[in-house]
Amino acid sequence: GESVGLHLPTLSVQEGDNSIINCAYSNSASDYFIWYKQESGKGPQFIIDIRSNMDKRQGQRVTVLLNKTVKHLSLQIAATQPGDSAVYFCAEKGGNTPLVFGKGTRLSVIA
Amino acid sequence: SQTIHQWPATLVQPVGSPLSLECTVEGTSNPNLYWYRQAAGRGLQLLFYSVGIGQISSEVPQNLSASRPQDRQFILSSKKLLLSDSGFYLCAWREPSTGQLHEKLFFGSGTQLSVL
Image (cartoon, each protein chain N blue to C red):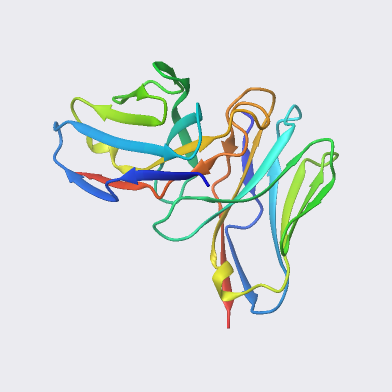
């Protein structure tokens, strides 16, 4: 079946460096993508979303890039801070179907 | 601003006991409401969603049920808990006027349920 997955389950980044979290998807009909941040014991927190008619979208210190040709999504975090340490989930959907979540990538920021 | 409240934060229940988890949203009207379950080290699984009072859609057959007795209240229930019902339960909402169904969900703080 079609699913959303992740290239790396864990990522360690030096404080101040940029982080890139990757996500691959297989559903060619997906037209909406979203990133969440989840800290331990808490609910997922919305970061940024993007539609398939866009290749890039920027937020505060974050950028989401979408490459529909290779079905790849990435989240870039600029100047990573200790508070960015968390598990990051990507999710995708097509039409009115529910979001399909990946298993997550754990980001650890080294001070 | 909108806020979502979910309680309790943690719950330990014996097998065979009933369950009731409550979720309420403030600051919005007629939100879309969702219940998700998150098993340890795994992604989120959609259990139920609701687009209005009394309207419940079930995504997976299971031992659980959901109800929406009021516009901003969503309840997850079980008559008899199973060991496999253990997990982290998350309520979520979205503003129906923005985007399509299931887009841009905002999650509550979750309930960690342990069935022993």
